[in-house]
Length: 58
Image 1: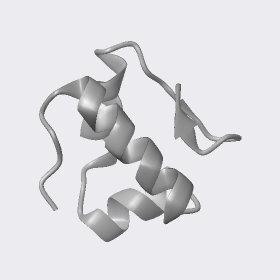
Image 2: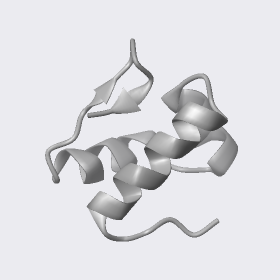
Image 3: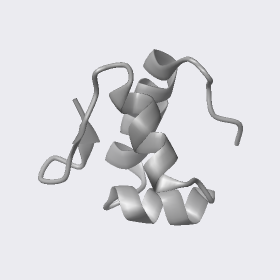
């Protein structure tokens, strides 16, 4: 799956996948072959951070 380049669209897609399919960010990144650090940095640039306890970006 191609992920959106826009960080706000990416935020929605990643949170939906975390909510519906993956128990953790690590599992999502491993399954989708995404570099976790790059994903976190991209979303951080738009003001989002990963909250492990909720398994979502906020």
